[in-house]
Length: 323
Ligand code: ADE
Ligand code: ZN
Image 1 (cartoon, rainbow, N blue to C red):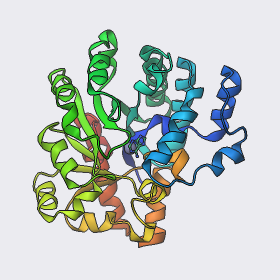
Image 2: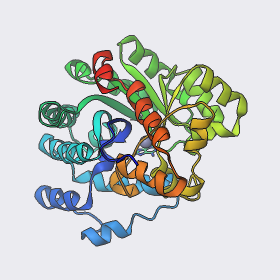
Image 3: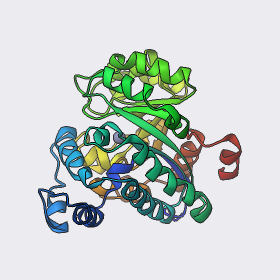
């Protein structure tokens, strides 16, 4: 059987703030004089029993308040990339949530500089290529997202795409139509979370109104056979996150996860870790979990790995090298 940890792969759905392990969170809290509601590694980890997406997001935003300056974002990203290399990752499209930092007084330049410094170093040191995708928080006003995008100035050239995340239900994709129009006009890649907790309509809206290139999660498409047929026909990539879906109670347990069924239906799925520090593992761990719970075969693992490369924002030359 193949070693799923060395199988070369790409990660397309990874929130860099979701890689903040308790040890680093406490170290940065002490350095920056930030008080966390949970003062030890054990106490922090005990909070990782989530009811749903919203209960996770509360802890996620509270914990990331320890990130204050560029060096903190660099340390966070460098730590993720070292783990990513050990999980077989060769390329990653990294998400970050600027509004969660700017709203605390951290300049967006500091966030981007910190993350980019570590991404650039990993290219030479670890052989991992990357792109950077700026996500907007859908539970904040679209006008705020638009204002942030328009205020980026020189920083615009340092990001490769935009995404849409945070609390999904009640915040449909179409609210962000103008933001996506501007981003596409600026030549940025466009993706959005849709069909994680909300239904197939959100997936359809992300495709029709935001004209996304990939759908993040998307698993609720299974409620709608006509949508599945369309996603197969249009070969729309779905960045599926098995451990996340179980931890956020979108799916009962890993043995019930539909990702392999989706693959058999002809959907263009990849396996990703979402917020690995909170959900019990990184991308290789997700692959291994699928083998243990669902009997993932070597052939299925190779297809998922190949899909991750094909659906990534790596250059065509890089994709060829990784196939
Ligand atoms: N932000 C970080 N992780 C997320 C997820 N799984 N869904 C929506 N927003 C997120
Ligand atoms: Zn996500």
